Length: 136
Image (cartoon, rainbow, N blue to C red):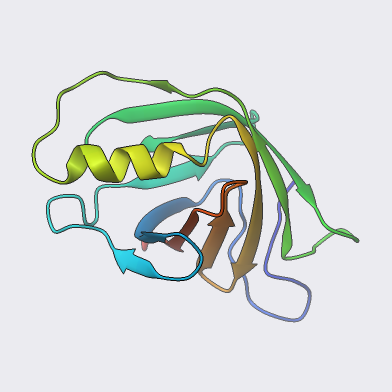
């Protein structure tokens, strides 16, 4: 299902778009990703029901089932993530701490909201991730 920012507004579909993570936080405050991770962390939701991407150093894949809230074309809903499979590289600096924060999104249900080219994901524990559609 292509989930967009809603009828009447140009929007970016949830599926098939490479979403580059820009901030991660706890709902009260979000911080930009550390310099060594910035621009590297991303997710793409495939039409095959999987999310694939990179956490800043390690690759990640997980089952991801999106359900729009309300009618078709809604810009918000929930994504149920399966347990993630990741590569196991040792990563320098703040990268591992950032990856641990991003992994909180998986193996549970997160709320999502797409507003034009921005995706906001809120994990069950309150972790908030903001991502933007990568420009081709």
